[in-house]
Image (cartoon, rainbow, N blue to C red; front, side, top):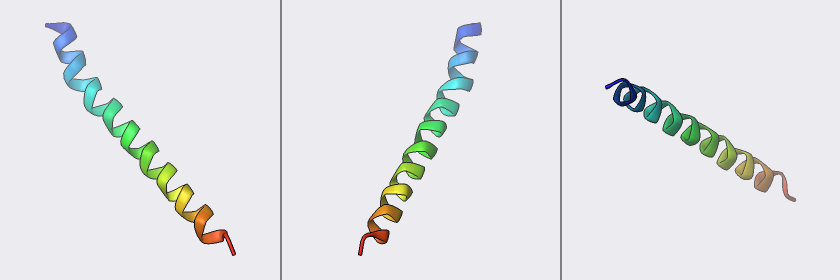
Length: 37
């Protein structure tokens, strides 16, 4: 039961962190591309 609660809490948090990092990485790539002459 306890591990089920942990899964319910941590899975969305981990997925959210990955999405935020991925979005940040994409934005960094876009900025780098825009900086190219």
